[in-house]
Length: 452
Image 1 (cartoon, helix red, strand yellow):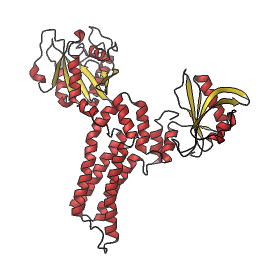
Image 2: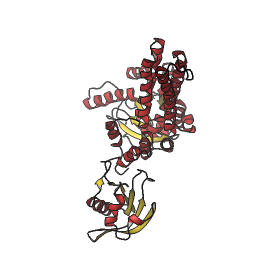
Image 3: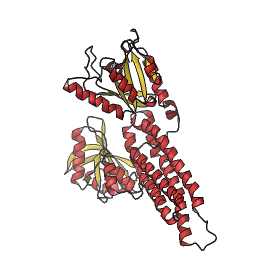
Image 4: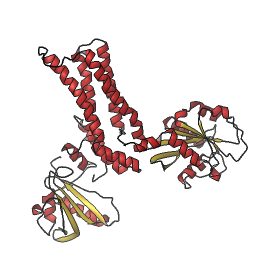
């Protein structure tokens, strides 16, 4: 299939000024030449754009501009042709249909980027970064993805691989040629501090990966509390729209309601939950169970308490389960007389609000920025590992090195210790796409949109 010439619409479908139909493959120029009547595209210079018409059996299909880019100086390192036609469903699909009739195959999702990877144009980290650019929800997520596409993360991984490979090579030379005096003698005592240093480098990258994940995916934020304390009002106030229904009737919110805001360059993925209480209502009970499950999955929990009521049993259970490092307590309705025992929540960051009077929300935003050090995250160079697949493989690298270090402590021979070191080297290679399995590639690129 890699020898096929592929085609797809590379712009969003719908009404618009221009659509782009993209081809890649050895026969890309030849195929378009069959339907382009103005000049011979085989004879035009590479990286030029050419005005003319597309025809199907002599019938005019569209007036177009055609970009011709000849291999290897293209995104896929194959011949690439882009037909810039009029936007709209009918005109664009007619051009695509005409190209398919003349020898091209419809591209699979992500197949252009997959070819760029397979042909050595980009590594796997850069390929995945392309999808991150498309999905970026804020400026910092875009910068992070662009830095990864630029090869900064790939360089981190390649430098680590080079250090490990140097030790592997030295071990093998020691094993195969022990009689030579001019080679470095690598004992377990010399190898151990080297492995510890590499492990520490990986652990630093993993520690920073939390920042990358926050930038890339945002912070999953759950608003929780008893019924009628102001959870839905808080969601609406943060979203600055009537996202959730607000009434004085307890239990109005029975299912989760989601929204998203941008805070300090970071996305906050907000989830308003059903009020937690004992209930005989079957539908409300399902909502309460969902709320409790979301508490376990949340990265930030906003517990809303009613200033005019004592903390009840359900609220106390929630407080006992919360981690102060990922929780903020909001005491709402501060315009009413306080009935809350502050000693029960003195280990948490507490914000006083009157949501209906729009008081205290700016303090909440500042508290979130401080809790997650968002200012520091976004002021750095944004060279972070953020992909879950990469993080998982880096954790495997740490395990591999730990196994090697344990082998050294157990006085195992170097050739057995080398097995774990090689596994670390291979896991790092899988991040950038070295010796990666074909089924993994298919799964990764299937997540891409068509035409990319």
